[in-house]
Structure formats: C-alpha cells, structure tokens
Image 1 (cartoon, rainbow, N blue to C red):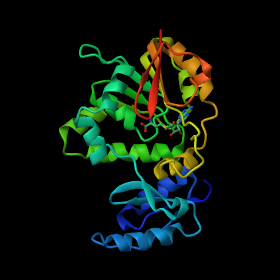
Image 2 (cartoon, rainbow, N blue to C red):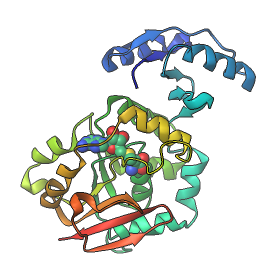
Image 3 (cartoon, helix red, strand yellow):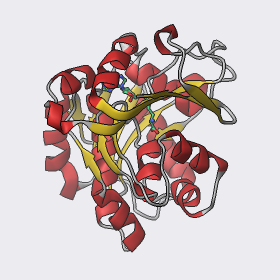
Length: 274
Ligand SMILES: C[S@@+](CC[C@H](N)C(=O)[O-])C[C@H]1O[C@@H](n2cnc3c(N)ncnc32)[C@H](O)[C@@H]1O
C-alpha cells in the first residue's frame, strides 16, 4: 500500500499526531474540522475527501487511531479495539472459537500457559487468550499495525470495565520487532510455554470473496514470505508447544506434519507438541 498519510483534524491531538506521523515516516495533514455530532453522511463526505488520491489514511481523532480505505469503492475503517462489542461478545459468551484456541494452547483450569504471540496483528487472538487467564507477550513488526494495536491498549486502559483492565494487564506489547530477531535474542531462561504463530496466508480466491477488511489488512502488511523461518525458532523457544493458525485449506507450515490438529469453522490450529 503506497500512499498513506496521517490526518488529524482535532486541534488538541495535532501535536501527538505529528509526532506519530514522524515516527512512522508518514506525511502529516490537518483535515477539515468536523463537528462531534456530525451525521454519517458528513463523515462519509470527509472520508471521501481525505482518501482522494491516496490508498489509505491513518486518522487520529477522539475515537483513537484508525485506518481508512476504500477498496473497490467500499468504504472501510480498520481499528484495533479490545472494548468493541465483537471482542466483548467473543470474551463473554462461550464461543466455539474461544474453546478451540484455548484447547490449542493447552489451557486448563489449573494451568494457564504463558504465550508468545509472534504475529499479533490486531491483537484479537491474544485478547481472547489473556481474557482466559494466559500471560501474553505480543510481537508485531509492521509499524502501522503496531501503532493501531498500541492505540487499542491506550483506549482499553481508560475503560471503566474492570474485566478489560484486568485482561490487558496480562498482555505485554513489545515495540515493533521482527519475531525471528526477538526469538534469536531470547535468553534460554526466557523460554515461554507456548509460541503462537498466525502469519498472513495468501487468500485462495483473488478478491471478491475475501472479506473487505482482510483485503485492506493484506495490502497493508503484504505477504509474510518469511513465515517458514519462524517454526524452527519457535520450536526452540517453546517449552510446551508451538501452535500455528492456518486457513483450513493451507498446507502445514514448512510442510511439517503437526502432532495433531484442531479444526475451526474457517481456520485450523496445527499443534506441535514438545
Ligand atoms: C494474520 S495477522 C495476525 C492476526 C492476529 N492473530 C489477530 O488475532 O489479530 C498477521 C500479523 O503478523 C505480523 N507478522 C507476520 N510475520 C511477522 C514476523 N515475522 N514478526 C512480527 N510480526 C509478523 C503481520 O504484520 C500481521 O500484522
């Protein structure tokens, strides 16, 4: 994704936005001010204007940091959020997904494994595991995705929901880093119970059926071409298991047969037991 810039139309956030743009190497623009109670149409008009001639816009406003894009004319906003209704639903209601990921990492009522999430992305999987009691270390190498994730932490920290506060206390976000480098620099004593890998996987169909949000995310981070080198490193650093999340149709990572597999609706978890 080539032309991304950072836009902030809120006076009180402008200097913070400028610093962030500088650290991400993005151009900074002051957008037109928009009234806090402006309707959907006004927001839509602003979005169209901001996106003119650009592939995406990182927007900082009172709601935090978000990435706006319009793949194939379809307006879209990508935001990492631990407090939104989807995440909270996933957390509060016994969902199938929650049970499978918990089983995949070997979570039991008496044992909550520590997990190194090497491919944190928007932090959704990490949040589910932390909500279930695991201690998580999150690694993300893409600076824009990392900034969106960091912003989700900042907003969650201000939440009035004690469960959210308790959960994010179990999640440690490391500054942007390549997971292979991080693992190479881990001391032997720093081993974690579980290493969790969920690299981007090229979608099977060209575009139409890939969800639009995923399209934007895919074009932002590109293909994770180096994902194969993660498995041997992860194997060395995990004391209990390595868990790899894959689309159901994909080959196992490195074509290496897992100890066993758990199937979800769209994904499966390949588990490599030590
Ligand atoms: C499919 S997404 C992960 C989604 C995540 N499990 C979630 O629940 O939101 C993959 C993410 O891993 C990051 N990533 C891929 N390879 C990485 C590596 N070697 N080191 C650090 N981050 C990596 C990508 O930038 C991308 O944001």
